[in-house]
Amino acid sequence: MWPDKTDGPALRTHLRERLRLPLFVAPMFLISGPDLIVASARAGALSAFPSVNARSPRDLDAWLDRLNAAAAEQPEAAPWGVNLIVHRSNARLEEDLAATVRARAPLVVASVGAPDIVAGPVHDYGGLVFSDVASLRHARKAVAAGADGLVLLTAGAGGNTGWLNPFAFIAETRRFFDGPIAVAGAIGSGRALHALEVLDADLGYAGTPFIATHESLARPGHKDMVTRTDADGVTLSDLVTGIPANFARESLIAEGIIAPDGAPLHRGSLDVGSWKSVWSMGHGAGGVDDVRGTAERIDQLLTEWRAARQHMARPGS
Ligand SMILES: Cc1cc2nc3c(=O)[nH]c(=O)nc-3n(C[C@H](O)[C@H](O)[C@H](O)COP(=O)(O)O)c2cc1C
Image (cartoon, rainbow, N blue to C red; front, top):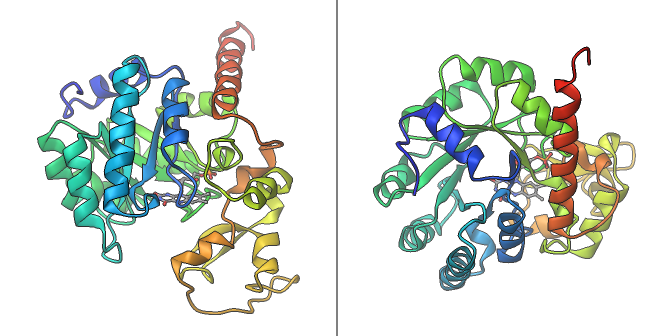
């Protein structure tokens, strides 16, 4: 399935060769499902979906079957993965991990915790493990726990964001890790994808631009809100789930979580169901002007990325 995973540079090269562009369509709660994954893989981008988006482990089996069938139909399509939330609050972890192992998902992204629990079973069938991290301490821990690749959550990312500056985070991570690095945080253009390559990262981990696609499971209001929100309209708040995450300010006000002047109204953590009505997005929302097909969005990123590379390669540019 993958070359020697302990050889970081070889794995980076292999991954890049299997993709049309250095893009990872990021997993999003209540947003990513099989349609988004199949469209991303066909358009040449790596992608993953949260296992809990399937309503039950049985539904998850059906989703995984569908993804394996699509991959068998089009072996040249990009690989795909499952996002397992490894936090102890995820009561489905054991069952969803078992389904993931049965389906031999090519890639697993472990989030909200160290990947210890998933690394062994996934490596046993030859799968790849990525771990999302928001600090150098967690990055080191994830590598020690068997992560083959890292997702660096940086300031302004949608969902449970990071805080570090991407220049510092990538450079410092490269001092101890030579495997694949994906970077999350307002990656929404081909120029941004190329900038990551210049910084010696491998993939842009983009969520927000893919909320506003036909294949996303987001509510129409969420899709529309992404198209009319800019970076100033995104607010970091821990009022929704207890974990700091980025949300559209308009949505926090509409749901009575904050007042129009930003004052907190509804303290304490609401349950995860509240993500249905309080809409998360990252600072990159301003770069998304319309709702379109996933393939079209990825093709545009590909064209922009190629142009950015050519531009930078020109002497004197
Ligand atoms: C609505 C929404 C839901 C998300 N849900 C998850 C999730 O279930 N699991 C996860 O690992 N990351 C989740 N994320 C984070 C994304 O995987 C990714 O890190 C982020 O969207 C990248 O930043 P960007 O939105 O600026 O592109 C979510 C992000 C958004 C916007």
